[in-house]
Image (cartoon, rainbow, N blue to C red):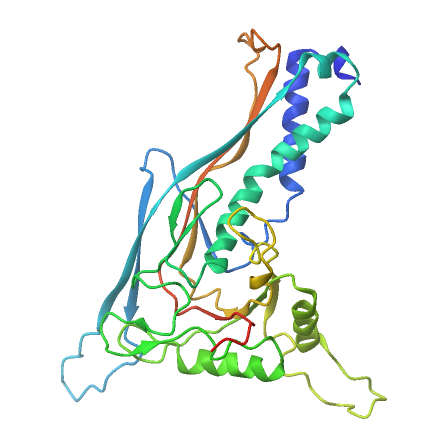
Length: 335
């Protein structure tokens, strides 16, 4: 059915369907990666939310006969306040397009519109890693974004602090090697030796995510490490791949981009390990991506242009409280 035969009611319904197709066509890699905890924020609860770390000491204490049990130590860690914002884009469908058999073009426009909000949310989450060695960056709209964590340092640092201990820790692998068998073991050692609670005790918790950019060499190396097997007839018959099933490999194509979403080759070799259990990165959703249709009962056409305007809207925030849950190598060999 061509749009020339559609009433406005049918057109709006069709636009909604096309929007949903566009929205669903985007792979929400960051949102589904396990790196971020996703929370729905109810309406009428304000545009800010405070997130705070809470640590309990790791071990119980001896109790003598008839002695009172000692109280467990609880320590509030660092705090971050996240502020939500809205994103939007509008597009006009002209009178000529609606009456001159431009159905394919309209489908393309509305489908692409449906993906814009989801893509922007993905970009904002990815840039927490992209600009993880800085405390702020200027986004594509010219807004200065605070990307520091609760201790006021960058997400990736060699000197993160703790609230109840003089111990410091690093989550950048020394010398920033590219992904390999040797550097993978170095990264795992970093996890073993630099994962603490705020009392300075070694924190228990598994690291289950191997994350990389979409750099082909890095991706293929990760796949070789995680998936390689030996034939039963091969020389190495019976050799067990110690990494098989140990990590979920998450490919993050928007990490190696600049603030505008263009390719940034200096970030191409970024990779690391993270814990979906310990993560303190949050995506708060106040308004899921949605289409804004012209009102059927209103004067929908713009008086001067005869356009029908459609829009996409979303509201959310991104924040990262702590840094103990994620480790990184920039892959550039810098000290």
